[in-house]
Length: 66
Ligand SMILES: [Zn+2]
Image 1: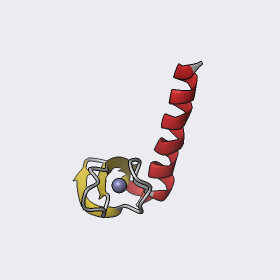
Image 2: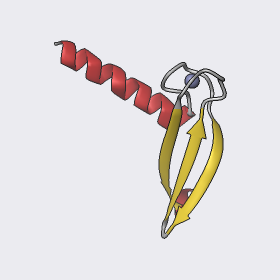
Image 3: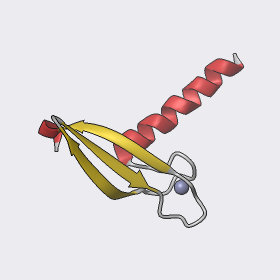
Image 4: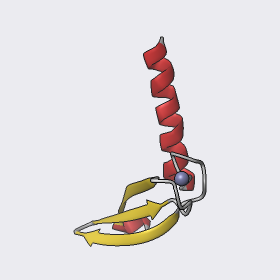
């Protein structure tokens, strides 16, 4: 039961971060800090703008999506 709740929370945060680039730690809007092109993929780093927050997010796109 507890595990399920934990998983649900994780996926909620995951989707917020993925779709809206909301910091999974504090809920602030993250900003793009870097983009790496590798083959057909683009890896985008997002970082939380809050000074004391360690939140960051790496997302992979297909080149066709960007
Ligand atoms: Zn944050």
